Length: 76
Image (cartoon, one colour):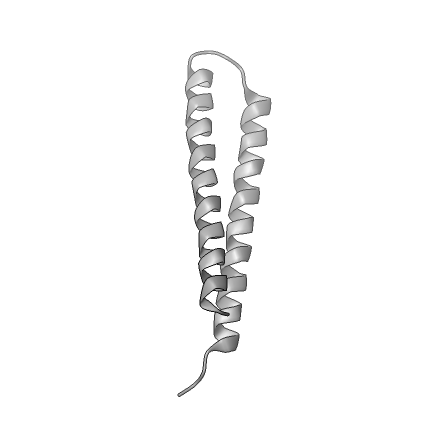
């Protein structure tokens, strides 16, 4: 993979991680709301599904990048 391609994939991974951080912050806020007695079960379930989906995308991106790197490695 050319260096610009690697940089682009790395940037995408960074953006996905930042989205994940935001999702975790939202989850914490929702959990506080639940502790205060508000029922937000539907929102928490949706957020958990979203978090799992994001993790799956990050794993796929990492695996793809590692596969490409492995393919193009030159044995010396």
